[in-house]
Length: 313
Length: 295
Image (cartoon, chains in turn green, orange):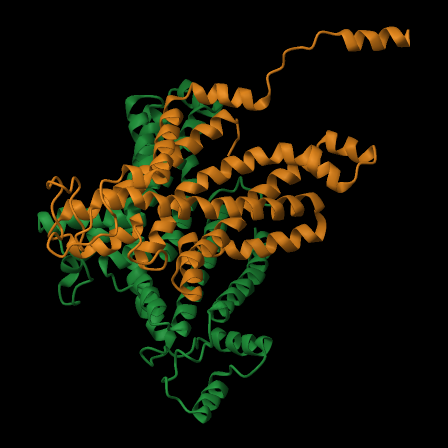
């Protein structure tokens, strides 16, 4: 286990390096001089040269990358061009909002996804199974930003039950702020729901077809007892899928956050793109990708710890 | 004796073998869901091609007097948008850009990704390791994030969106291509070809390609649905197609302000994206079982 852990962590290091390189390159594949966005249009040549030196754009790429990486490793992602505040502060404020939303969405998705998956797997080829399969195809096919709009239309514009956008002013208390999260979290939960349902259905059907289940029934275990065995066997994989889905939601929330004006990382990215705030764009993407890589690592490690049968090579 | 043997080979009645693709088509034909999905896609493609003949009105002609007319207004069967343009015509014309933007990146990535993956899988060794570890880096970004990051950095626009989406799908296809090629490479018939002195290029062309392209193709079709949603998503964010072009994602974006005035009208473009995406998903599922590709 320890050897596996060490190998898995060692394998992550070059990935992290690659991720940093891609994020660094983002600013340099952007058309035009990265300085232009910080400069007033009538900047003098002196000011230009000064800023160029200040931002380090006059150095070679490897040198720039090294300096950027060194500072990033120390928590300094530069300064936002639009607001003048440190990128790190902006990103972590937004990450809190995105995490809250993604975790709630993952929990909703996991609960209903496993419910549908279990029922469908237990009663294979029944009407319930077909309905669950159809639902999961719909879940992975729906353009979720559109689903968000439809939910806003129904629950905010027509029924007026829930606020259409925003995260509230922060003074509503727990339940008050939860009201703001319901629509975006439900919209977001559709994707993990479909994927979890599909996975759990296949898992349950697989487990039920194994001989040990017949053995359990033969020795007189009740349905409930058998069910507990099935859950125990399905849990590691299902939890791993849930963990990965949380990662996808963290990084993929941009469209949904835009629909709901949710002040998370997606919203921040959107602002960064349209204000050509390249340091902010770079920093946000780096942080999100780091979250994703670390989450993948955690999922692998937890899965191995939960399921001793997995002997990783 | 030798002559006799030869003669018997020549004269042996040719067994009527049906090809692989005939079998695939026969199985696909028995799958009503896949056939229906295929017909929907065909209809959408025909709609895109013949848009000027089908659309009742000019999709660009705005009218400040007839803005946001409800669905079913005389002269506007599906209402009019925020600039008074005919919704039905814009939805029909929208199929052109939306389908093109959804399908093209997958085709490009199919070509590039297969080439990279087959090369890595066939060559093996440290070249394989180098290529696959580089590809792993791209897996560290969720697809949506990578697409938005690239097109955000490159700048909004149709071409940049296509490039970004292609970059998103290349690693995914390359990984599948590498996996199947590595499997095929160790088969006996490849060994035999190598022993008989065939060059690397010939082996890939004759023995590898035919056996790996099927599974890669199936995987690529399953990506079209994702690509449709992502491409429209980029336009929805304002990173893809620019106004006034009709494109479903962009139409959703510009109609967002109208959800209190004409809620159902505002949701229409999304219905088109949804239908297209479901149809591609179901067709990909059908193809997968017809071609007997395990996932």
